Length: 380
Ligand code: GDP
Ligand code: MN
Image 1: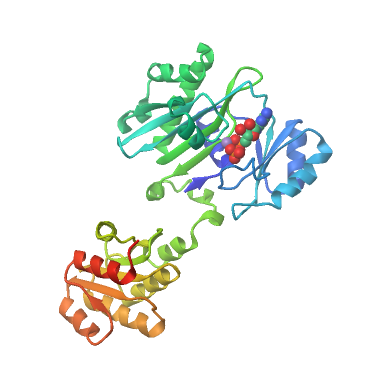
Image 2 (image 1 turned 120 degrees about the vertical axis):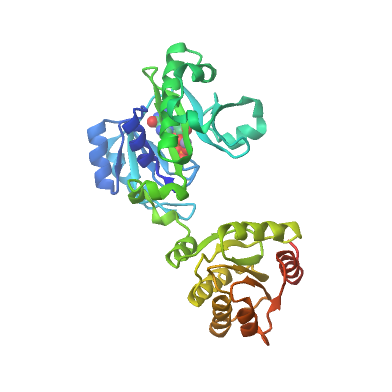
């Protein structure tokens, strides 16, 4: 789950990471009030889950009070990367003496958290990574050290961002707090771009981006109200409401599987035989025929689908329930692509019987199913 800048900064303040004394507002009138209270000039910033807000006209410096209302109205009327701007952050404009990039994220390769830093901030880090990879600094932190990171340990890294020892010490202090916040909130990313030295030579976070691992949201009830429905994938939400886990992907072969591990193995096998999965879909343990119908609807919403592979290993899930669901689906909707079914486990005989005489393809093993779906549906 992504947090907006103003939400991430509220968490920063709780843990003592310095950021501007800004205010989030929803109307132009509130923006005027906030600007009066904060003092001019201010920066008005669109709160949307999209990068490059500046380029899209979503970040404006305003020096005159009479310009606040029209500028705020303009930004609130924008749609940035298909997302409506519903909130603005009004921030006292900071003087930027130096700006750097700082983030902490999960490195799956090393299975650690890693700080990424770059002395050239403000710009897109992805660009720098391509054009000047040597400028990207890394500092790895093992999971168990995140909550107790030592200031002295990160000082050398901080000194590469700000050579002034006093400023580097402030950066190191921010890193210690970031690491703890990262672990406490089960974040997968916290990014400050830019982290600046302001007019008083103080280090402050001028921007903030934070992503919390959705799989850990069950232990962060306090964060749930921060979820922005505008940027949630509607299909994923619908799936969740129906007890399915669904994640859309780029490929063409629709997958319907019971169990997350088997769903992953199914996608891997499709790739292995030269195909490309269109989605991850776990219909869960006890699969009623209704769930299968819902799963078909989700898969078929994607116009790129060329074949569907149904891979069921019946345990608690009964193969005859799945077969009934498949038959109901075929009655209720037009399925314009070949379907390959592999049913094994609880009640597999009954399941197969139910499907006899239909046009469905069958497979005895996962590899065979993946091959058939890939051959019928075309290679990626
Ligand atoms: P982003 O474009 O979505 O990353 O939004 P940012 O908050 O990072 O703002 C984009 C750029 O606007 C920053 O890199 C700064 O150069 C500039 N900017 C933002 N806030 C201020 C401010 O308070 N003072 C000044 N001088 N520039 C700012
Ligand atoms: Mn930024």
